[in-house]
Length: 228
Image 1: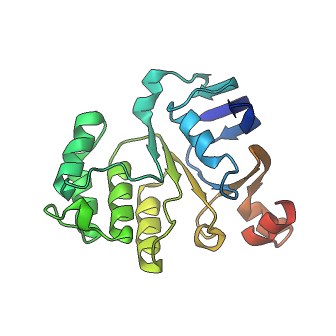
Image 2: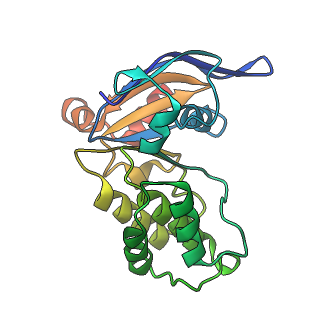
């Protein structure tokens, strides 16, 4: 087990964004974090990434309470843009290299070339699809054990989605864990191992998708509609 949440709760001005979440993640798995906007997906991810503190409950990483040292092994990609408009693609690589000791500049250059970006391209001139691919390239160039991707497929065209999914699958393996939040069920069903269904801050169900197909024949969309 790489991560465990025990009664994890986050409250903002009297309103619970995440409520008593009990959840365990295993190494070598790809998880889909599924729920509507405002369901608590981003808040949960930010607590795991150490960007916001829980109101109550506990987060265990590799069996010990999550601490600042663990941030070196946890990569979080937010939905918001986090590059400056004046930057070039090469500047983004330098920016990440300055901030993260586990950032692999050679890997970044390789991924950037693979997805059709060039070092001298300006961030301000990139399409939404290209910007999304640049964010994922920077995130995946870290040697992270736990990778949290917040809506990586949102607002981009089909081709860009396929390229991003391909990049994720290239990096996924037995030694790391991915959590991908999304509302695009059909896009992730083919490669997600387990689906975490969250609504109003509460985890309603964690489903092993292969087991569900064998035992009930239900698709990810079927399960979603049944419980959400």
